View 1 (cartoon, one colour):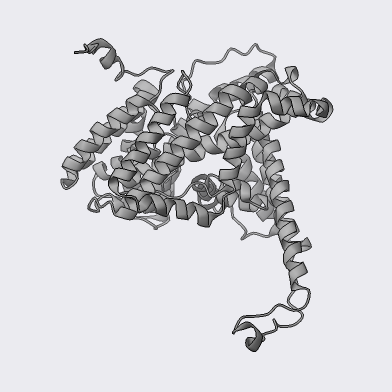
View 2 (view 1 turned 135 degrees about the vertical axis):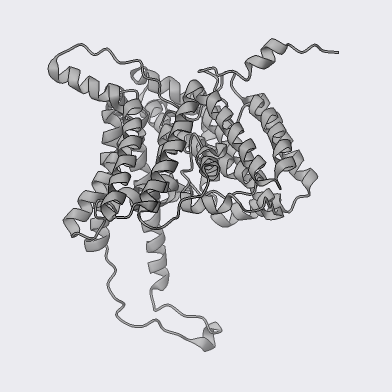
Length: 518
């Protein structure tokens, strides 16, 4: 009988900075199975169930950020109290004062951890002092739970939500572990009504959960991690050692990597929540199928883009103060969205580029590509078409032109987004410049066939990833329904097969999710 190393087992429950607890690790799988057993034993006991989930969520966060799980507890207590102060304030001035206090505390906390060294570096550069960064640890997911908590106080201030009666309900909302460290950012008004609902997992929810978890694992481990460790990281670390062709494909690779990494986490988070009977919001909707940058931001990181729209863009005035102010508000929202991602000029530039592109897209749609009113009504010939409308002459050509225009829009949008990803991925502006320089001036197309041969496995994985991304929505829904209609044994077999595949292909080191750093 094999012996169990108790010391090694206990070490698994201790925080290790280089080994965060993530969904794609074997330890999380076994821990999650044990947790699920306890959850279903307590599912009909309201408060014990909540305490059980909160404690597991705090442990989950402890395994990601160590002692900083106390920060999550502090944030919960403070925002719960401030929300009650806002709601019970007897004047508008007091309500606004408490809200400002909440914003200062939350954004100040975020600013300390994320932007202290950035601001200090700027100060050192301006004053010609040597820059020696402070040793400040960035807790995993601090941006996510800060925005999530802010949604609660802002919605109460706006009168869209009443505060919960007990702190245990609020703590459940803030700390709920599936989306705690990398989203999706859950709105208080969307999640809090679910807290006291009976645990009910329908056949449809179970099927969707299995589909999302399996597809999320596939995206993360088989596509994202493989491309990252074997191709993208190598080229971005030393872009000048590689040709422009290799640099270009590394950019295409990173575009796929970050999508599969982040949407893979979101898929797993939504799927795991469904196993408990809770519904989280969609966070990605095939964003690279977008034919404009405006459409891209309706499909990419939906929970963040809608948060910025509802709580920042609208607060700045939205489109209510004239056209020039609308463009300014849109630009500032994206600029601050870039800064939210990281304390570096390359993130600010990334946000600014998207802000300018959104403004240009809005201008073109308003003044250049504005559709004129139809010159004549649609012709109808019910005798020839069985009651269906018939387009005027030349409609076929218009349909083809529309499709070609859409394809051109998709290609242009995709390449603009890829160009911006260079600044997002590079370690600094110099590295970003090197990647762009190699692509622009040292492309070396003559090595194309050697490149195909030398990187055939990488290119095959990339091709599979992009093909799956561009699969039509109806086919994706059919695949999900296929999983839903499987018997329980079939669903279990599917998950087991995926785990076996992951064990065979995963890298030796744990690959944290990209958005853990934000």
